[in-house]
Length: 93
Image (cartoon, rainbow, N blue to C red; front, top):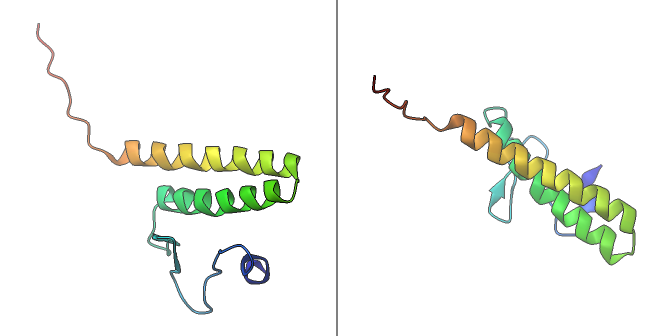
């Protein structure tokens, strides 16, 4: 489905039988990828779609896609923060 759409805008649909497809240095996460990995990949795809919509004067669609990109970026950053180990502070009594 995305392959036909994607061919004109620089997106790459996953190859049949392939777990991961690389595009612009960002790989589509396979089954072992994290939700943050998926969100980062989605953000990069939606960014291209938003630019395509704006280029064709589909302003409302471009806006909605920009909001989706912002949400995916936030999810990606939040997932990265959640994975970091936070050193507990020592309480002085």
